[in-house]
Image (cartoon, rainbow, N blue to C red):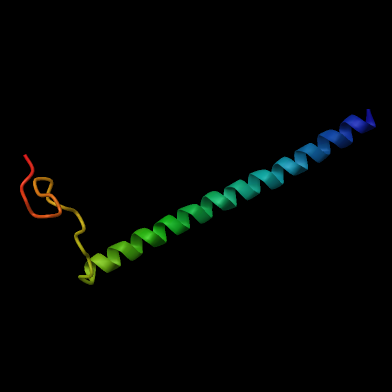
Length: 66
């Protein structure tokens, strides 16, 4: 019976640490994403936005594609 209680306690404590670690990872991912979005918005507001999209009707050589 003591062994089962110790095993249950050890499992409970390890799951708490796992849950805390997952929570921290999720929070750090959110902070990273938020920072990247803010950097992109700041770059666009500063005028350093570069449109890298291509016209779908033009190939890289400039000839129209139908």
